[in-house]
Image (cartoon, rainbow, N blue to C red; front, top):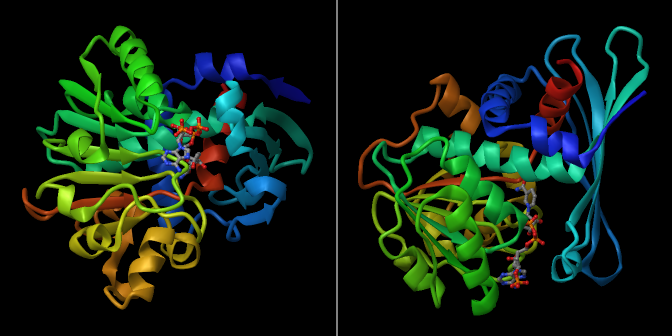
Length: 312
Ligand code: NDP
């Protein structure tokens, strides 16, 4: 059995490779060509989680699972907060054939999925990106979104001004464009064309009243029906696109809070990103619309990315 370690994933799963793979995976997912139950989340002590995500790709394709621990307190120790394995099975023989470092796949495929959504939903000329959070997903989102829009500037916000400043310096050097730290969320998102929320915030940090018409927002940090990064106002004011309708109806915290408040119904989810990509649901309809992509993360993205590494 082959093992693909973190270094190999980081080196070979480039955004040029991963973005089109995730795009195709999400189209197949929305067409019902992939099969997967809702993600199981096993709560552990101290706010830690264990995620179990089985699935099968299109047709008689590869199947497997992602097993992933989420230890949010690892961030302060400089260790990945998401760690685990993606396990691939050969569709012809039924044998397990490959184990892939899931922390690195998750870091890259999640950002690639947001890049796909941004490419489909943000205004063509969108060039100013605001990132809330300065962890692993913040870095991968900056790298991935640069592939799909001509970014001119990035603003970052996080709870520690020092860490936000350090992230800004590091990413300025790496990306070759100005990345600056903002003192608060409202300042960070003022003038942004694209906003990514990639934090472990339990309660909303992003208020709809701060989001200008025409903005595209990727809500990524909350992946179960508990913590929410954006308020009900943003949900209600937006054209709301899910990665998975069933997923968001069960686990999309921002949507579920707005629904519980009586502000939106299930029909507020206008479609899945795979439907927008396939052209069966309209994406952005005007330059003034606020679009939201709610990301929960799906094993179809992990299996497709891992298979591409194994099979080439
Ligand atoms: P990291 O642990 O690397 O970074 C976490 C970030 O969240 C840090 O910037 C941290 O900074 C910040 N943070 C934690 N608590 C709060 C809070 N209460 N308010 C504001 N900021 C906070 O995690 P990742 O970058 O890997 O992941 C970011 C989020 O995205 C996580 O919640 C993760 O579960 C989620 N995720 C979602 C995926 C999806 O598919 N949708 C896939 C992978 C991750 P500080 O503590 O200094 O404030």
